[in-house]
Length: 252
Length: 268
Image (cartoon, rainbow over all chains, first blue to last red):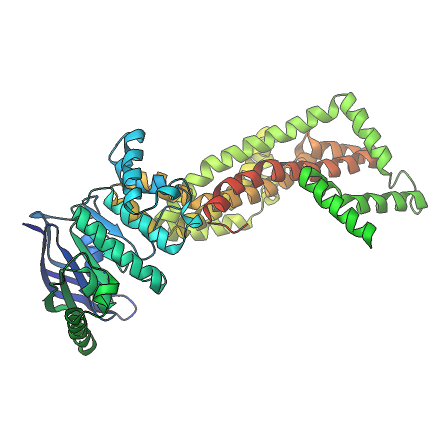
C-alpha cells in the first residue's frame, strides 16, 4: 500500500540578489510503501533536503504533487514526523515533556501522555534521563530523544534529515543500529536523507540517488535484518552495493 | 602565611553559608575610606557627614514615618510603570519579532523615539499633564518600554527556526507555537530587557521625582538640598544603591537561574 507519493515534484524559487529563478528540484517522482525504509542520497546541492522540507510542509512546492494516503498535503502536520540534524529539542522542557509534546498537542491528558513518553523512552534506552533537560545530555542521547519524540506521535511517515550528521563516528554507528532495531520493532515508514552512502545502504530497503534535482537511480538493498555493523562491515553484498552507490554519487 | 590561608578558608566557608556576607564585605574598605575622610577634617561636617550621622538620619526619618512613606511611593510608581511597560512591550516585541513586515515598519520609528530620552519628554508632559502621577507614570513606562521591546524582538528572532518547525510537525497550531516555543525561547532576553528597563526606570523615576514630585526618594533628596541637609541626600543615594542590589539579587538573578541558565540557553 502506497503511503507517500511524490508526483513530478519541483521547486523553483526567485533569488532576489541574482535577479533570476533557481531550480532546486526538477521533476522528482517517488513512491514509498507503508512500512518501508527509503534512504535518499546525493551530493550537496542535489535537492535532497529541499525535497524533505517540501514533504514536511516547511516550504511550499512550486510544481507537482505530494500525496499522503492519496491526499494532497500542504503545510506541516503531525502525520509527518520530522527528525532534525540540529535535534530541535525544546531546551525548556524535560526529556519526558519533549517526548510527550506531540500527544499533548493532540489533547492527551498528562498521565496518559507521560505513560506514552515513558514507553518510547524505554524503547531508546533513555528511561533514566526522563527528568533531565536536553542540554544535560550528550549529542547521541539528544538525538535518541529526537527520534522517539517523533515516533511517539505515531506519524504516517517519519522524515529524517541527516539526523546523525552531527554526532561522533562511534555514536553514529550505535544510533544507526538502534534505528534499524526500532524500525524492525515498530515498522514506521521512513524517508532518511543523508550524504553518507554507507549509512544510506546500511539502513534502507531502497536507496534513491539524487543528482541536480532529479532521481538518478533507485537501488534495492536486499540485506538481511537485523543489521549490525560487525556483520555488514565485511559483507560482500554490502560492500558491492555501497561501492556502486558511491560511484553514482561521485559521478553525479 | 598559615594564618592568611586559614582566614581565607574561614571566609570561603562563611560566605558559602551566608551568601549575603560576600556582598557586604567589599563595602568595608569603601566605608573605611569614608570614615577616614570625614574624620580627617578635610571637609566641614555639614558638607560631608560620616556614616554614623547617615545611620542616625535613617532611624530618625524612619521613626517619623517619612522614609517608609516615600520609599513606598517610589516603589509603587516604579512597579506600576514597569508592569504597564511590560504589558505593552512584550506583545509588541513578539509582534515585531515574528513579522518581517512589522519589523520593517516599526524599527526606524522605535529607534527614533528611543533616542528621545525619558527626561526629554518632561517639558511637553508638564504642559499636557501637569505636575503629577500621570507625568511620572508616562516617563517610567516610556523608559521601561524600549529595552523590553528591543530585547523581546531579539529574543524572538534568536529562537532557532527548527524549534518552531519541530513543534508544527508535532501538531502544534501557530498559536501553540507562540506559547510553547517562541515565548519560552525569548524569555532569557525578555528578562534582560526587564532588567535594563527596571534599571533605567528607577533612575528616570528619581530624576522625575526631583522635578515634579511631592514625595518619593528623589523628592526627599532634592528637598534636603533646599534645607541644606547633606545627611539626607547621602541617605537617599545609599537607599538607591541598596534597593537596586536587592531587586537584582533577590528577584532578577533567581529568575535567570531558574530559566535560561537551567535550560542551557545562557551560560552562567
